[in-house]
Length: 229
Image 1 (tube, rainbow, N blue to C red):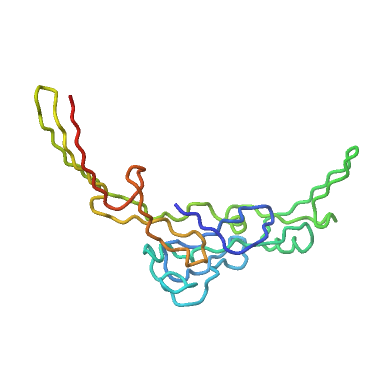
Image 2: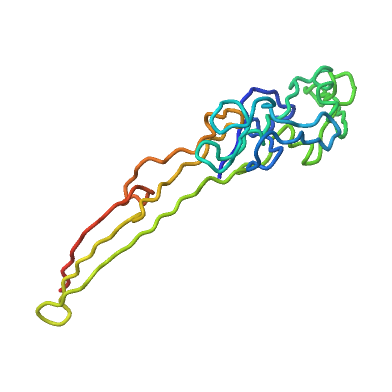
């Protein structure tokens, strides 16, 4: 599975998952998905790629076809999380207010040598907005990981062997031939996980590996003999 990450820097109001993108459409869809309205009633969420004819070769456009080597998923199905200021001031509160589903003010009086603590806009007592509910919070924190499954891998192995009895009972010679990935089926790596960087959203052939380390590789033949006594 692949985790799709955002590409641009952004300020998170509450220390959220800054490297996760927001899924706004089916990753296996094609073209530019329709804007996804937010449950908080604000501007619809849409991909950062809004122009260009869908293609599987041109850069910075949506996918014309998915499940291919050059476009395994549609990068336009993901968007960067929304960003707001992180400082505790009126500007930060104003940035978050359109998405707010509640507000709070916290005040703690001085205790001994510890001074008072006030959590409000500029410590003036004006309530701070906050966001609740998965659909609303996901706009800032990103959606769960593992949104896209890669192409996976498979191979067919085959063996031929024969025993030849020699001398006395219980003694024999075994000759065998083993073929790993006998059909020489190619194995692909996972696609890139940066949503709006189309160049990295390519499924590339994996490197050749060693059968002894159980990696998927090209066809591998092995001949062996064994004398049992």
